[in-house]
Image (cartoon, rainbow, N blue to C red; front, side, top):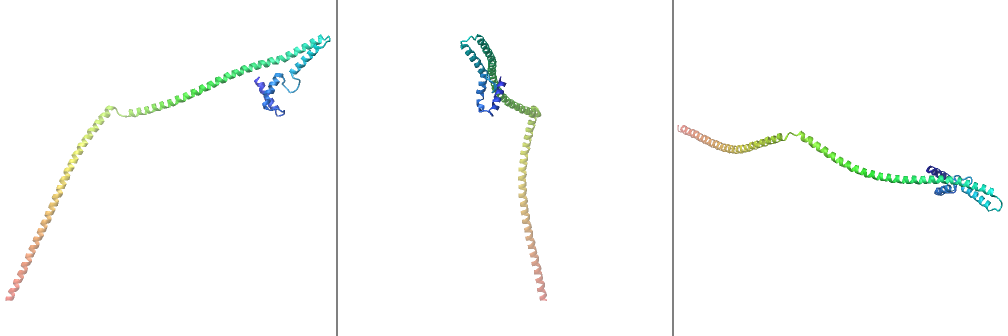
Amino acid sequence: MLAKGRKLAGRSEEMSAHYAFGPQDDDAIIKHRLLTRTTTTRGEPPLKKLQKKFMSFATEIEKDADNISDCERLYKAFLQEINTFELPLLKSKAVVDANIREKESFNELQVEIERQILQAQTDIEDLKKQLEQSKIERQHKEECEAIRKLVSLQPPRSETEKLIADLEKEIADLEGENIACVRTLELRKKQFALLLHVVDELQNSIEDEQKSIAYELRAIAEEQKMSIEEGSGGASDAMAVD
């Protein structure tokens, strides 16, 4: 019936290009044709034929003449036309009822689909949250695994404690050696300062001795020079006396 309605709607759309009614009048025209059993634009409508049969029968009954046979004939023709007209109506009613049931089924199906869509959306949101939580948990597991691998690469605690103790002992020994070196260095500085002082005094004394020796040498040289001059002067006087 739906397909038939669609075909009629399609035909009405095609006819709208040739007749003086638009697509908005399609539903009213289709409804009218279904009620009057008019499926084409040609021929006499079934309802009008039924009306004619009834009018012929009624007119024949109202006559005063002896026309029982004609009345029976027209009555039978009228009943036949009623049956002919009623059968498509019953079929149409069955189709309408089926369409109503189908529409109700479609409405229920639509409600169920909408419910399922909402449920699916809710499930998707829940799955998204679970996915995010799973990603966080996986990241934590990967970090824990990386830390575990780093820890497994380290030596045992006993070895680490022994190594720390050895390093502390070595540091203490180095600090002791450093203190001894500092003391030795201070002593060497004092000794070197004393040595420099002694060297300086020695150098001063040597310079003083050199100066005194030079003075004495000059004095001796002066004395020798004077003695030579005195000797020269005595000889000259003697030669003059002679």
